[in-house]
Image 1 (tube, rainbow, N blue to C red):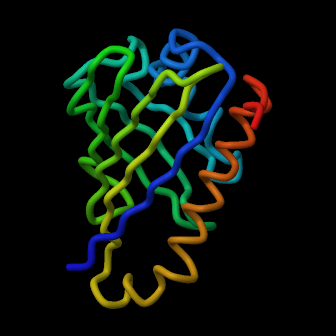
Image 2 (image 1 turned 180 degrees about the horizontal axis):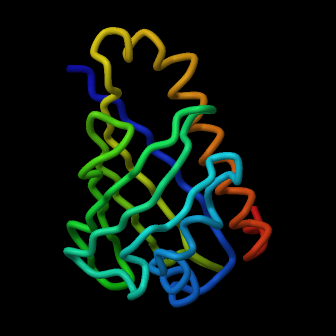
Length: 155
């Protein structure tokens, strides 16, 4: 079993309260997902995030491949971090840790994702040119969307 890791950081010129309020509203997830993925929230986004919350949505991760994604918020510490675990969906395993840290002039958001692709060795063969580039594209989209919404962090 090959376990992959994706680690991303982004700084934004907003307060911790602003960042946390946006990130912990599950309804905002669709805003941070490319429209071609056709993300539709089915249930679970009616309340602010909490440990034990189950979110269901439809998503098209690849053209012609529509699937349901069900995840659970397994851990949650207010204004620090939350963890979502895919219970059902396109990955064989998906564990996503979201951290938010206050820094001078804003916040730093950090994502650490451990994941396993489906289909055994076939999945591993397509990972470098299909799955990994797709994840990079999604996180680049998210980075730009957050900058459009909240501004660019001064370097």
